[in-house]
Image (cartoon, rainbow, N blue to C red):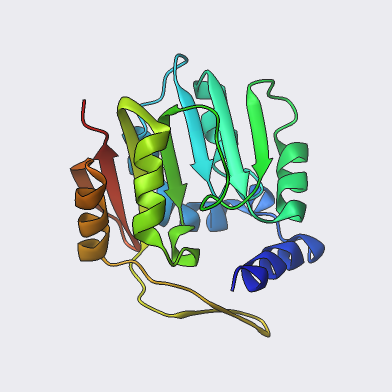
Length: 200
């Protein structure tokens, strides 16, 4: 349930768990999901508008916002968004949105949409990938990093949250249905990274 996910991420903030301030060894560990290969796949430049699905406290946004024209990040946790606003306050090109990507109504499109370690919380993957296709400009790209783990429960201390693991074949099916194309697949220690393009 979404409420369990929201409560989990709200609780992380209450527990002062902010990945932005992780020690360097932990940051390097997180790079195993969305390090240099992931960032390079975004093909950033100062003309592009970017959307991050599951912006969290801004761990990736801090690297990406300085390299683009407009940065938008969406997250379902109000406490997480509040912390992200603090962490990203130096950037005047950042807009942070509190909402569920499945339900949020956008009034614009983006050159790049990306997400890392968030799709495990999304049950209706086909619906969200279809929506991303509509959110992208022609020739835009969607970069998705999904955990290789096929666990159906995320355990953190005493909390247990139901998750929906991603498989390569299911992502491929959803992308094919959306009318987009996978132009590259990158495998890291812990993740599959898909570089997806909206066909022109």
